[in-house]
Amino acid sequence: MALLDIMIPDVREGVTKATVLKWHVKAFDRVQEGQLLAEVVLAGQPPVSVPSPKAGIVLVTHAKEGEQVRVRDALVLLDVAEASAYSTVYQEHRPPEATPAQPHPMYDNPGTPRYPGGPPSFMTQFDERWGGG
Image 1 (cartoon, one colour):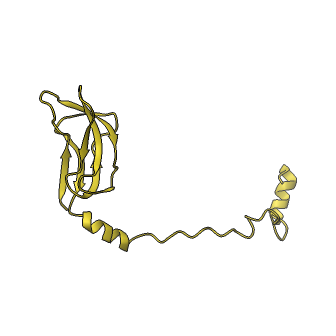
Image 2: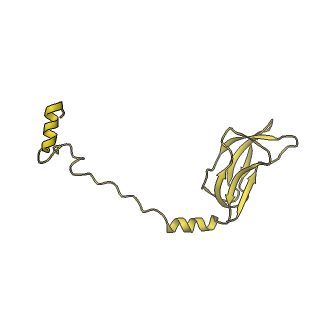
Image 3: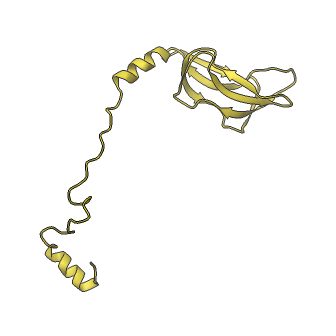
């Protein structure tokens, strides 16, 4: 597992804080080299795009949208070694396609009586005593 921390860029001297404006990825997303990860705003600057320097899998996003973070702090943790293995493992362990649920002959048919052979005796006693139906 080769991990890579992607830092908030230092585009202007003297700026120490940045705000995460928008995330374009979330944890466990697979990203390509150059793909946009996030947009951050440094004080008095237009938004700065943070691209991925390598292909990999996003393991952690270190801040939430709107959260203020320090410049040069880690923004995203990427696993760059597993990027190629990810698609192979996913293909081998892909869950089976879901089949549509079949209607239940008793419960999904409005014309079916509640108790096909008549209610059990304890239910009849209950209904008579407490007025159930």
